[in-house]
Length: 323
Ligand SMILES: NC(=O)c1ccc[n+]([C@@H]2O[C@H](COP(=O)([O-])OP(=O)(O)OC[C@H]3O[C@@H](n4cnc5c(N)ncnc54)[C@H](O)[C@@H]3O)[C@@H](O)[C@H]2O)c1
Image (cartoon, rainbow, N blue to C red; front, top):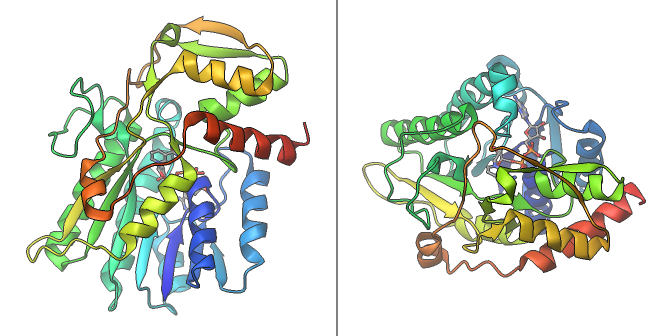
């Protein structure tokens, strides 16, 4: 079985590729190793993946269709897991074209790669909880009608769902959009709060707390996310007309930002120096996943508490950065 994983040097892509290799898949990884965050971290993940001879890597920008098609033409994919994207809500206010290139042009290019496959069983792609915007109907369920994204990042993710729907309808591509809710864990993303808070607390720097800490996030541990994706892999939508689904992958237990900081403080045995700041443009007050749909489909239930997950993250962080 051959699977294309885009964004393979990224946080989720790395963990997913590791899990797929363990299951005996041939994994073709694509990533452009851009410097949105520490490239050394991406290379360290890649080094581990490259230890496995069933992993084949291409350093390619998915917004360049010619290079992409040329490199991938020798493969026939059974599955495609499309994770490469410009992530981050706040950065989308500073560098909109990174989102247009990777998340819109790049996304259409991957759809074209999917369309060209003859044996494709399932196309899965990363959407985001950010598509729920400022919705006050919690928990967020997939039935909600969503057309009010509050950041360009969220708008590109919602667009991805629409673009993928149209390809599924036109070409019968069995497609699942994965709405991830704040994924965290070892080998995580330095631009995310849990990572930068840990970094700053250990280095004695101030941490920024937005909206006086009155924010809630449905933190989902990476191992739970990977388990959900593996369960879904062989359960493609099978509607005759448009075999397309979107699914929340969340923890279903939102945590207050300040409680989350306290957990990090207690695990590090250090107090944070907090800077209380106003709400940031593009940010949302709460994320909270209704996971009934994925539970019914796969039996998926997240298992990791925030204390357990952060313990694993901090253990990894201390080893990796030798601090
Ligand atoms: N981590 C989360 O909490 C979270 C939440 C919601 C959605 N998502 C989505 O899940 C996916 C994976 O997220 P992640 O946390 O692993 O992020 P990540 O930034 O660690 O991984 C994305 C990878 O894609 C690569 N990439 C970006 N643009 C590219 C391009 N044009 N061509 C080739 N490679 C490119 C990056 O170099 C990176 O390694 C993304 O689509 C993200 O938007 C993540």
